[in-house]
Length: 198
Ligand code: HEC
Image (cartoon, rainbow, N blue to C red; front, side):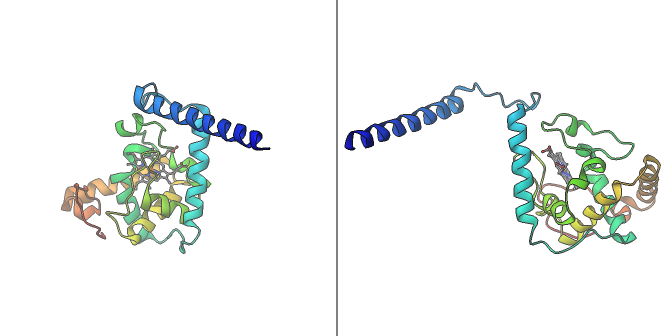
């Protein structure tokens, strides 16, 4: 009995030492390729996607609220979306910008994938970001009201044509030519920008 227990303990200790050895080997030798020009292996992709979904849905469960559909919220949402999301995710009639093209995992087209998430989940992702994937958090710089506007606009994207989106861009450009960026509701976000609502 004692001998069996000892054998089990030795086996467990050897297994732990082996795992620790492999982890240290990978961490210190640089054999793991961190390049964004290489995609994750299939199993890593599966694990990361499943982890993202379960983590987001657990945390968004207690959020009350729904994507607004009124025109003021959607207009504000569009200005933020066009200033901060298009360069990575693209939009109807717009390809991903250089930022989005260089990322792994590739930022998904939201007009195609947003339906996989509930409104509170979209809110949570936009507010908190996804650390493992490189999706930025907009909560540190934007009010909840701004973020709900972005969620409303993300939902509206699902049924938007390229022409609809182009029309919004034309109106935004015209407003900016007349009254500057603030007049269009869009604005650049310098490092250190405090939470604000406009
Ligand atoms: C710097 C690039 C970048 C910017 C800017 C960006 N995102 Fe993302 N986003 C990502 C990446 C990368 C992912 C994760 C992709 C993955 O895991 O497959 C992601 C994931 C998401 C997801 C989850 C989609 C899914 O099905 O996995 C949502 C929703 C989202 N972003 C919304 C937004 C919104 C709204 C904005 C603008 C306010 C924005 N993102 C700005 C890179 C970006």
